[in-house]
Length: 244
Length: 233
Image (cartoon, rainbow over all chains, first blue to last red; front, side, top):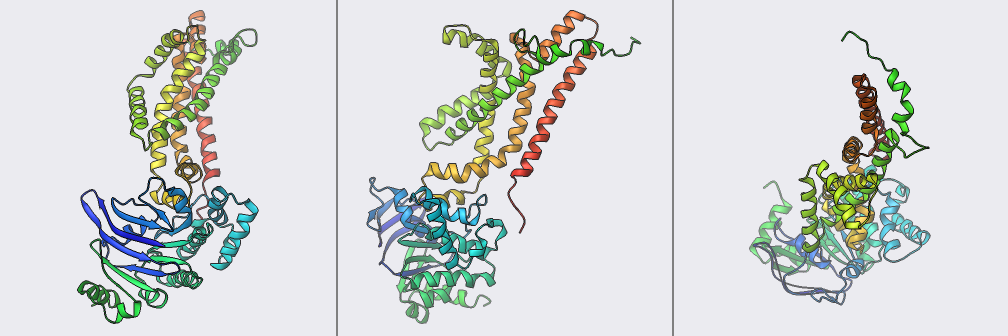
């Protein structure tokens, strides 16, 4: 479904992705973790070409991203993306946030798009907020709307870039449970997150990155019980007991 | 000079101040001032929008010439631009062009250049995440601009637009230099004819400009209030 082969990326002189090889299969849930500045956000952003890559091969849902013939807009329609900062459109109501892309890109009728949006809002537990504006919602509610917005395009892959990092602790759970629900429905997912509980219980595989390199790839149980790499051990120690 | 001000001259010439010789002759006075301002205002809104968008183009071959043009116009006094239009337009078109059209062209080009900078800043002021969110749902970049960025940006631009348009209203007085009989020109005409009341005439003209600009500013405040999106939680 997603295949990185020797991918390199530079920001000016900074080598942010340094030879990434990664293969995500259909229906798989992969968690990417690592210290800040490790390149994990950049990695996930290359999958829908919010960040172009400079070297190597990247194939997403059968589309070769290095080929000039690939229609990037078409690819992005098939790949949902959820941002750390939600990025809802503040001038549009919740329902209009969700229906905009299906109406403009999928050419759904307004009625059809709204019915589908209401189903999605039901699913994330926010049907009553259909006419609210984003600023009237809490962070957790905004993020759930953002997930519904991404799902409205019926994507084949969902990408999450630290979806809970901007949330108050008591709102993290509501977003994670939506993600868990999505994972169990068979969605192919790549999540950059520090939520180790989510990684342990929901993911099929954990990828640990540092300095633009994938240092470790393992089943979650194995990764948490017996990390191989020193930096992964250090990272887990800091994450699980931040006070020491 | 012990004499009190005598505004009888204003009352006697009020119709001429307001509409010139209209309907028996061409529109003049305040009516023409407003016509020049409104037409230039509408044209330079679109002119500024187009120039502003082009100046943000991804393609250097579009961006650079546009920025050169904008900077060139911003570096020239408006009076020069009007003069240029006055002499250049007839030469380019190969026929005479009405003076009012000349002035509208000059005002539009000049104001568009300034408006383009407001548009550019307004667009750049919208967080990058908005564009990323839009294109990541599959919207094409122009759709992201049209449906997401511009509606938010334009609201933020309103106060600067209003400043620019108030300047524009006052700048129409420069049409006087090419003999367009707008308010200022009419004032000088009446002054030359009566000779005795320059203070009264120019106080009146200043007051008319003030009322016009103030009304416009107040209207835009009201509009801003109506367009402000809900901030309540």
